[in-house]
Image (cartoon, rainbow, N blue to C red):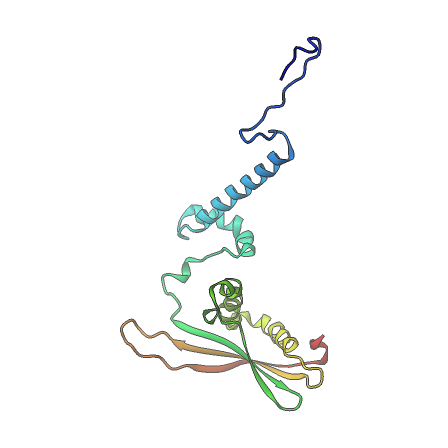
Length: 198
């Protein structure tokens, strides 16, 4: 900057970053916010990935639980040990219409999808196979049945009953080369009301 034109007038130079942008402008604020979020996210994921027996995990998991579940990155060690689930599970619903016709509606089954769609549909599998099927979650069964009734609604022939069905097969031990049989059980029947379809 040339200050020789007016020696009585001082102009303070604005510091510049290496990229040539002002250190005090809006670009700097955005980078700071993004960097803070990335730092938080990395610390959260690393902390959450620690074994549950560590004191750090216990302390941090209480504080991060809501965020990790909302973001869909919560992972629990129970998936791997001490007793991993030894069942293949598929969930479906039997929808009965006013004229007596029945339709089987299946919850999304990500293993049959391509990789891109599987990424977005996995939560639905987890909801149905890991949560909806459990008796301890019976409070959500009516809501699930109403949702399925709305998805399968035909105004000329509306659904009158939705049955939630569990399908499961035990996973054979390694090396057995034998497929285990599938079992099926209706665990909830919901009589659909006209107001449920709106």
